[in-house]
Image 1 (spheres, rainbow, N blue to C red):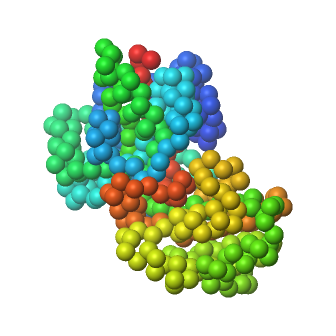
Image 2: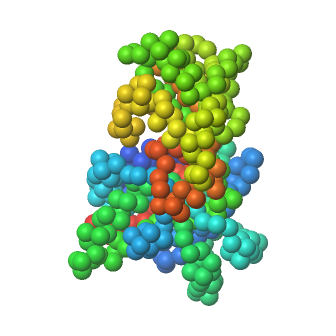
Image 3: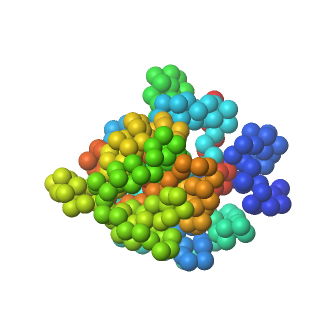
Length: 364
C-alpha cells in the first residue's frame, strides 16, 4: 500500500504522525492498495548522496533457516509490543532493512532500469531535505530476472535495522503456519540495500552512574584500563579503541591500555562497546545487564555533539561515553560468526519513514 498523496498537505506532518495514527488514516482512505504485486526500486535522494535499494518481500523461512542473519539479540518485552502493534495495525508500515554483499549484475540491472523509468511515487521531506522515490517493476520477465539474480548471487543477507520487527513476524508466522491461513504471513516487507549503499554511525551512551560512585573512584577505575588525556575541546573519537567522555563539564580521551587489548589478540572482532560493558559499566557502575538497565540512555551519532552535552548536563551524576562507529565488515563478520553486538551498537543511514510503503495483512 502507498499513501494517497492527493490527501497529504504536508509530508513532514503526515509521516511524522502515521506511526501513531496509521489505523485512523487507513480507515479514512489515506492508503491505496496496489492493483498488482510488484517489486520497487527505492531511492533516497539527499544533498550529499543518493542511496539506492530494492523494496520486496523476503521469505521468513530464510530467516528461520539462518540465511537472513542478525547481529543483535532481541528482547521479549519488545517483541510483545511489536506483536501488539502488528495485530492492531493489521499491516507492516515500515520495511525491515536488509543488507548484502554488493553484486555487479544486480547493480547493473538497477542502473539500466532507472534510465528508462520515472518514479511512480515521490515524497519530499523539507525538514531533512530528503526525497524518497519508488520505481515500479511489474514486467514478468524483469521480475523473474531480478529474482533469479538474488537467488543465484546473494546466498545470505543481514539485518541492518529491524531486529525486533523481524523476529516478531517470524514468531507470529511460526505459530500460524500450521493453520490454513499460515502462508499469508510468510512474506515480510523488506528494503534490500547492498552494504556499500549504507552508512554506519556511532551510537553513544549516557550513563546515570555517578550518583552512587564518586568522581574520584570513577576516574581511578578508568585509569586502570585506559590511558587518559584531558581534551581542550569537545570531540568524538578519531579512531577505533578510543573513547571520549564528557564528565563534570570536562572532556577526556580514553585509549585502552595495551595489556587490555592483548587479551583479545586472537579475536577477529573486538568492539569498544563490549569492552566498555566489561571493564567500566559492570565493575564500576554495577550494570549487569545493559539490555534492561534504565540508567543507560542512547544518542545516535547523527545528532550534534551538543545534544550529548545537553542530555548529560540535564541531570546530576551523568557521564557520556562516545564510541567510534562500527565498520560494516565488523558487523558482517559478527553475524557470520552467529555472534551478537550489544544493543544500540549501530545507527544506519539512510532512515526509512513509517507509512511510505506498507504491507497489508488482510486476514488479521
